[in-house]
Image (cartoon, rainbow, N blue to C red; front, side):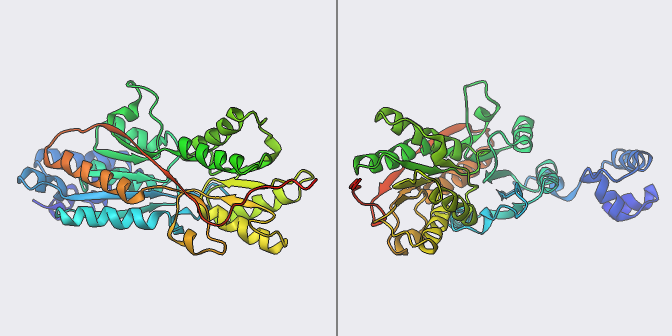
Length: 349
């Protein structure tokens, strides 16, 4: 029996059968019950599940880049070079083990419904989430249901935390931010600004915390006037820099929560005739490929995206191959990369 047969017996269209199987909300309850009765009576199994029953293991991973529009302009994270290496390594790692990768961009809240269907219909054997907010509700629901999941950038508070029941991969954002800020302090800077990332995300929270810790440990009072909110996009870095440079007490250095925003800062500085690093020292985060080619080359914190992607994909694949639920919490070390965008601060006043 196939979906055409179910549709014929139930007296509905094949698309209606598909909507019932995929748990769409726009099916009248009476129609839904009619279709489900036929499915149960004739033991109809949808294609993906039928493959499982035939003894063929699903070999498709989902890679979900969460880029929901939190501002009017929309968050352009998915177009940044931050995601490119992660995507490439995920696909390469999977292909080498004869797995496929289904890549999907979540740009609207309703896109999460499509992702849930992929899990519930067993169209994928596991999923990798990157770019989401800390404790993203739908990701949490999927983990709670027991599916195989890897999450990049997620807080795990304790052993009872629901995200302790999946694979979590974080870069050491707190330590990286601490090192970056201390580097500026050791160069003699005291008025150090910070442009945050999207504060719904764990990486942004940790990078702000690392910045503040470095200041506190050095006896420098945290000045909230020197902290501007960004959202990890170049445009937000540009706007935040404009605000900082118009303040009465201008910073001599700025630690930016990612390289894309740092590029925006450089753009703003050029427009305002602020020389880097002579007038303003800048440190970014992530070490995207472009960072080393900027003029001046950007000092930044290197994040091992290749390693993080490889861990996410290979661990999910092992979990699927071994038919086990594998839980782990990885923290990947980061490294400060010194280039030309910072200099020793000489207070001439």
